[in-house]
Length: 128
Image (cartoon, rainbow, N blue to C red; front, side, top):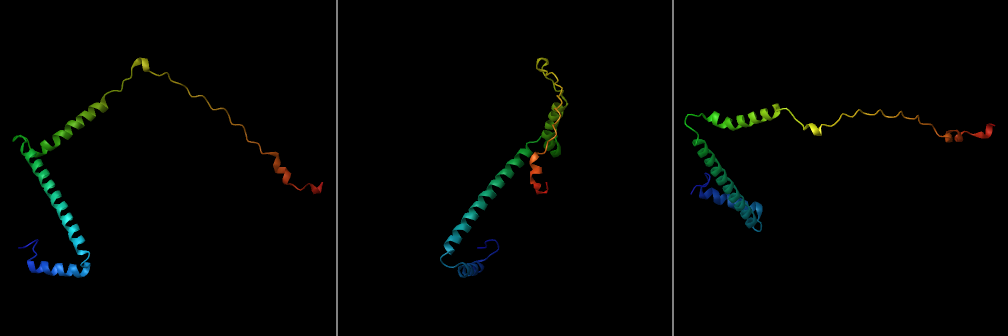
């Protein structure tokens, strides 16, 4: 039994090293997490394989006279044509909803700020 190129003796050595490094109390938790990770990886791999096979079968449904590049670029070209058509169409608004232009009113001039008279209160009045 070869698992990823590892024979039974190598597997035993790896398990003994794992037992020494991890310890006997944490080894079941480690094995459980490794098993869960392997199940998840296997499920993702099967999902990817299924998706890949479905895409390959959809490509095989292409007309024999149509090349692969044309079949793949055709939907993009259709969307591009629709976008160009939408952008080149003039924008129209109903004539009754045409707003009348409003000229902006100039802002009133600002009044200059005056300094309060309290600035002179700091001067010593003993000289007078």
